[in-house]
Image 1 (spheres, chains in turn red, purple):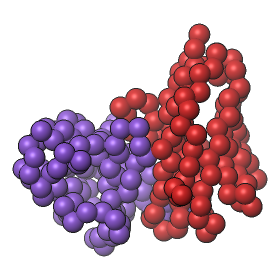
Image 2 (tube, rainbow over the protein chains, first blue to last red):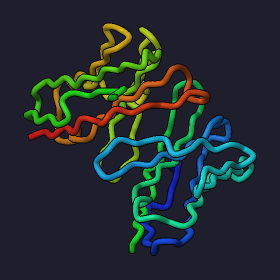
Image 3 (tube, rainbow over the protein chains, first blue to last red):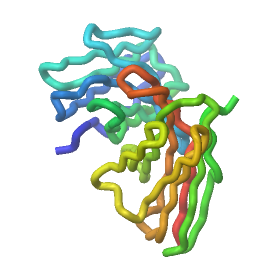
Image 4 (cartoon, each protein chain N blue to C red):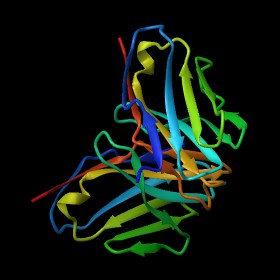
Length: 109
Length: 114
């Protein structure tokens, strides 16, 4: 079993749609969780951290369920510019980060 | 302004010919990381430096080495590149442990092995 697993997609959605991604992790001792965005052939960039209480940043909402060991990302009112790969990232402590392989999102006009 | 710089952006080498990739940072961060990312796969941590302390991941092949001569620079040396080493190599930095510090990534070096 992979340490961090994501549905690879792709998710094809129209502009304005709401789309949700899930991610599961295997290490129950994982401490911190993040969503990164990666555009084609570019470096990953931090989208948002994920807190136990859930957190929101504009159109983006992240949730963490420690009991079930999964993380989610909800994107509301999708924009064309949201098209990218979304990487789930888990920090297992110290300096070790495990990336998921990413979920590809295509937003169409 | 670029904060994590990688050179070159594209590197072509021959099978077995040593190659060095460079990373520099203007953030004065303590930690520098090297990741390998193959097409449609997750970035995979190879190793990191906390200041001068080198930390190798258990499954990183011996073919991969790293040097950090000072705070600003970190190098990835591939001693004998194989076809399977063709990938994007990403350098990242963080002030301290990732739990409370954002990682900043450079633009990557795309390595082709002929």
